[in-house]
Length: 364
Image 1 (cartoon, rainbow, N blue to C red):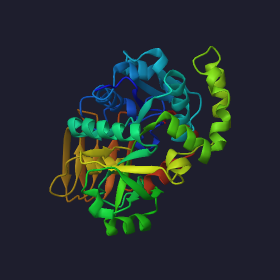
Image 2 (cartoon, rainbow, N blue to C red):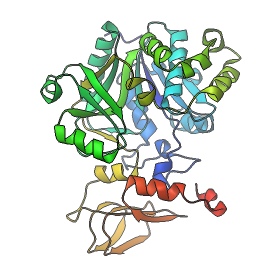
Image 3 (tube, helix red, strand yellow):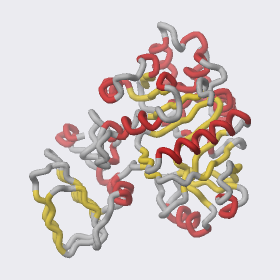
Image 4 (cartoon, rainbow, N blue to C red):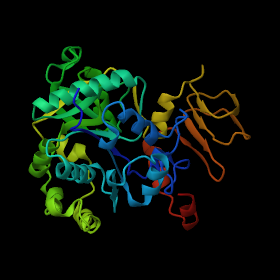
């Protein structure tokens, strides 16, 4: 199998604020082992890519301030394969940067975009699906995403409806997307789940570099015009200065909103491997095995009575966590911070963003 023109791009620039207080600005969640698998999220993702493409064809896009953490956790990554973002601008500008980089190296590049915080239960099945998706995008001018059967009306994911609906999903073949909705509200997500015709967008994309370049130029000129002159700048001594200037003018927007909701080239490959996007505390609750009372516990010493549906996390091995009479809460205990909050992504986000005390900043 010829894989010389296949590339993986790992997106690792997020600040991980929704995993505070374990995830901090100085070391966000992609550089932690939040799910206690024995390896950090980004290391797992890198090793998964090694089963898909040659090592020299793996790139990481991250914030400048996290480049040292990437070097620490993936020391074998070639320096030229570490793309440093000067500012946080979400996934669409990151995709643009990596696309132009690969086009400069290999105009025939086939690209898989992977988040750095996914958990995949079956790497063998994952590799097989990626291989089939690579073959499809090599022969067709499409933007492919992988789809997961949803288990709940989660508002943190994109929802995809393909032509043919639920019956078509059993075919294990790529399907053209009918509608793509990025992060709907709770009511709409519940409607999507009730129909049985929607899949979650796993955030794992595959395409020709040339195809995504054309679609971004068509749908997001506010981004691509910032990269005019990339042919001469990327790979040269002025690349850092060029990228800094380009990012200064880029909007903060996800690829879902910028391209996937607009393009008529969107396709989906229904995936049947175990998948979890561990992006929030609530998603971690859905990943950790729960006791008979629905408590998800990641702590060494606990004493829990008359409590249901809680998420309890503490990396402090010597500390006893005692809880009584608590329901649907999260208790996150670290060496220097303790959070007790309703186990609801929106309430937690509102709570954290609403804290404006100057003394709180050192705990970010």
